[in-house]
Amino acid sequence: MKMIYSWRPEKKYRRPEKKKLTAFAEAAAEITNSGINGTLSFSCVAAEEMAEINQAYVGHTGPTDVICFDYRESRSELPDTGDPDDDVEVEIIVCPAVAEREAAKRSLPYSREVVLYLVHGLLHASGQDDLKPELKRIMRRKEAAALRKLSEKFNLDKIFPAPTETTGNI
Image (cartoon, rainbow, N blue to C red; front, side):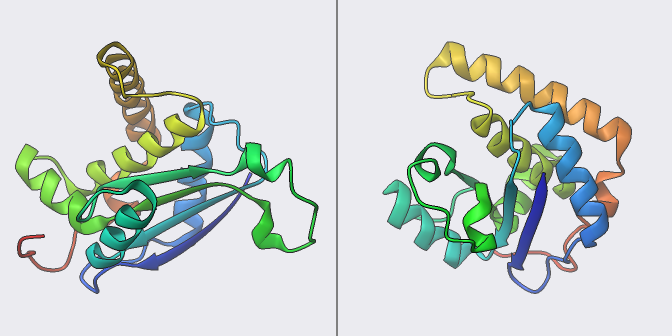
């Protein structure tokens, strides 16, 4: 698996080191059985941009925590253009501002919340669904198991350092 990432959130959210983030994302993709063989695109965006993406693609108002796009089925129907960006199989977009807000509500570390969103997106890519209560329970158990395994292997605070200042309301 190859990973590309972009970092476009508000300035107070510090960019992860690429080497650490790449190793972490590879482990997370394996633990969640995401089945990504090509490229994973991981982006962190500002609340305003996430709200625009959420409205345009999901039809919901305001910023959300994570959005996952799985292009594997639709990509198999397209011709190979030779463009490396066309190799993206799964795209996960996370909003650090929402992660900070939700982590504070639950008295959890910011890093854990960001990791939860990445794991959540990867589980969707592995075919998990959380639209029905019984499926949601299964997905939550898989999220918890993945978070445990990742926490054993990685220092989450070193990958996603805490924001540099407190945030206002989103």
